[in-house]
Figure 1 (cartoon, rainbow, N blue to C red):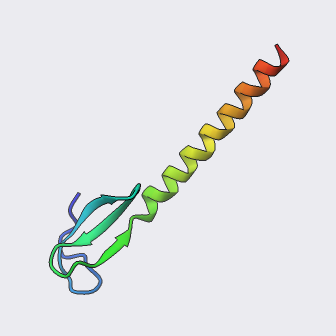
Figure 2 (figure 1 turned 135 degrees about the horizontal axis):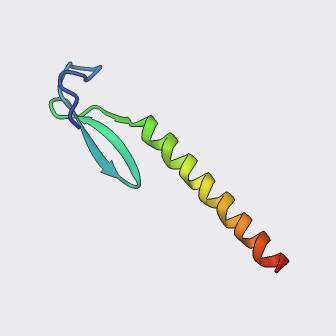
Length: 64
């Protein structure tokens, strides 16, 4: 979703951009970039949860 007039550097329009497995907000006018931290936090939590599920699955299959 575009964030109009939200660039901290120039007051321009920020748009979401995906590069190297990370979401960024990039300013259309000046090129300012910032990592979208809330998405990074969600991705880290999802990765940790998937590791926990895999560990539980391995423990269950080892006991059977």
